[in-house]
Amino acid sequence: MAIDKSKVVIEINDLKKYFPVKSSSFFGKNKMWVKANDGVSLKIYKGETVGLVGESGCGKSTLGRTILKLLEPTDGQILFNGNDITHMKQRHIRPMRTDMQIIFQDPYSSLDPKMTVGQIIGEALTEHNIYKKGQELEDYIISVMNKCGLDDYMIHRYPHQFSGGQRQRIGIARSLALNPDFIVCDEAVSALDVSIQSQVLNLLMDLKDDNDLTYLFISHDLSVVKHISDRIGVMYLGDLVELAPSNDIYVDPKHPYTKALLSAIPTSDVEKQKKRIILPGGIPSNVFPPSGCKFHTRCPLATEKCKQEVPEWREVAEDHFVSCHFYEKTKTMGN
Ligand code: SF4
Image (cartoon, rainbow, N blue to C red; front, top):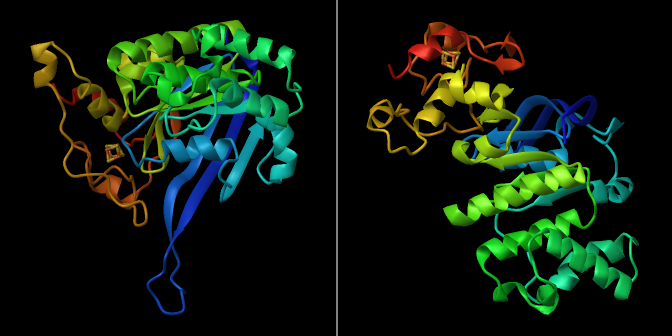
């Protein structure tokens, strides 16, 4: 399905999600916060797949869950199909839940081991009164299972009787059964072997075309999102630092962090291996993030200005956004 830029499925504006940290002071006056998302803005259009990448702990999974209101936002705005759901109570969100789904990373822990595949896929359908228990429901479940590459006879089996790839297909079928508009795929293939990863990625792409879906595809692995994403966003320490069409991210990364992530993709090319950019240190605490540009403690291009001033989020080429004072110098890195 082509991307329809006239229809915005998800719009988030300056979205923040902070988690409180236990205060060490007796009266709890100096309350501290883990700033998991620190003011993220993004639009996702109908039929689009936006990939979201970054190291573990950068806030990408929290962002996916906050967009779906599985976590309450601290500040900012979330619009779903034009409806402001930011402060909507869960009982009002509930009817919309069928339209917004999530596929989790670990297909085993996200499936109830005591339920059969049929029960797992059918549970939300009966809860939302889409189907009553009976033959019609069973026929529908089987049709969704078949779409996801699962055979009819598997309907009575339990999760432990399946391989990792098949379990992820069950998770996908559970989400798809509700006929959603939008799915957050949260590290949906990360737990799978590489050969199974590509099968599940192909399935997700086919289902997207057949069912007019829109995805937010979260992964720590840039080589995985490449194949599935129309645009890619790169997150660092709770912020979106770069957003561009998928090909542009790979061919012409503008942010030093993106360039370093790309250089770390395993390759058999010896020349590319030599150009790997090793970032010093680990990710700083997002309770006390660095001043100015949060990446300055690890950035090979950092200057005094980077320590003082937060870089502006700006469009530096068509549909290519970045927050870096010296993005023009990124191409010199690793040369
Ligand atoms: Fe590096 Fe400075 Fe750009 Fe931040 S603003 S990414 S520290 S060059």
